[in-house]
Length: 346
Image 1 (cartoon, rainbow, N blue to C red):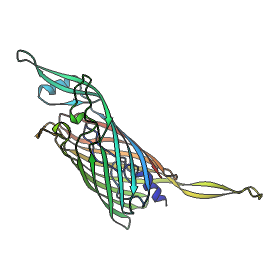
Image 2: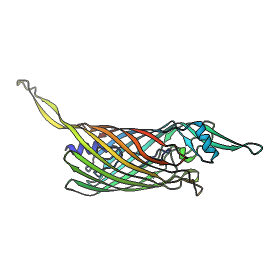
Image 3: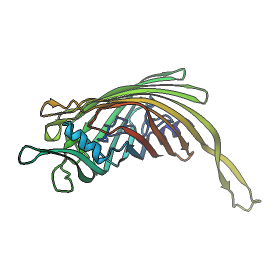
Image 4: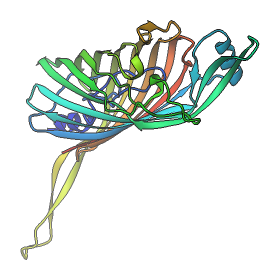
C-alpha cells in the first residue's frame, strides 16, 4: 500500500523531456522514483490520479556586454539571460495497471534577455553592441506522455515512453522596443514534436536504481524555425530513510471509559538521491539553414531529497551542476539549476 502512495505522490509530473540551453522546454519533476529528472518505469494503479507543480530556476554563466559585442563582430547570433524560471503544473492518470497517461503545461519566464547585435552604418563601418531585449514570459507548450510497462518481476521493471508536444505556447512576444522576438526566445515554439523513450528500474532493499532515455524530435515551428532535436539520458540512485508510521486516533463516546486505538494509515519517509544525466541539443535551423553556432551538450550531476507523506503528498528539491559541457557560442554556458517539485495523490 505504501508503494502505491509513493508512486502516486511522486508521479505528479511524469513528463520529463530535456530543455534547450536557453529555450526552457517541458522539463518534468520525476515520474515515480525518488529522483526528479531521470524517469522511473513504474505506473499508477488503475483509476489513480496525481497532480503537482514543478519549478526550475536555471542560472547561466552570464556574459558581459563586451563579450556579446565581440561575438557580434564574429557574426555570431549570441544571447544571454540573467536567469530562466520554468514552472509547470501537471496531472497523471492510471488507465490500467500497465499504462499511465500524463500531461504538463509550463509557464516560462526569462529575465534580462540580451542579444549580440551587428549592424552597418553609413560609409561602410560596422557597429557591434549588446542589445537589451527585456524580460519575456508566457505559457509554454503542452506535453502529453504515455508510459507503458512491459514487465515487472524480481524487483526489475521496464517501460516504454511515447508522446507529443503541442504548440500551445505563445510565439508572439516582443522585445522592449516592440519587435517580435526570435522563436528560440519565445515561451512556445509553434511546432509539433514527437517524444519516444524507455525507462528501467531495479529495487534492492531500500535502494532504487533507475535509468531512462527520452528523445524529442522537433518539427518546424513559428517563423520557419526548427529548434534542434533534444535527447536526455540518465541514471539515478536513491536511498530511503526513516520510515515512520503515522497513526490516527479512534475514539468511543458510548459511556465506556475513555480510550482510543492507534491504527496505521501508512508510512512517511525521506528519500535521498543522486542523478547523473546527459543532455544533447541539436543545431537549430531557420528557413532550412542550420545555424552552426547553436546547439549544446552537457553532463549534469544532481543530488537532492524528497519527503513522502503517508497522506499522499510529496515535496522534493535538488541542485544540478554541470560537470562537463560543450555549449556553442550562441548560448551561454550553464551555471546551475535549482529544482523544487510538489506532488499530491487523489
